[in-house]
Image (cartoon, rainbow, N blue to C red; front, side):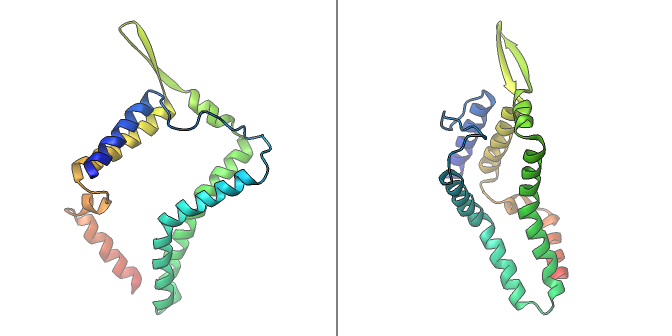
Length: 171
């Protein structure tokens, strides 16, 4: 199954390199007044997807809070969790407020032109970055036969160091 997922990710990465998209063709202007329904549905969608990723981590921190001997054992985990959740969103909102959406359109116009057999192909930086990420994850799934970073770290001393550091922090 992971090999199929890896091949699909590589396919999406190659498609992204060539500017192919799997999103609806209708675009929404950031200045269009669509009422409260669209932001509400987007917020619900973000909440469900973010909750699935961060929920188990939050549950572990909450459990640690209830069972810890001292608040000082919990503070580093709670602060790093909060910073990891809110700082990226705050930075994105700040950049949009300061610069609008112009920097996104500027970034999407940067690219490289390659000529093959008298035909020019344009590769944009956003497509190159997205395609590279898809291909890297696809190769990870195929070669490591796992969807876990721990599989990559399993044969190294980094995993042992991580668990030792966790033990020290929890004392």
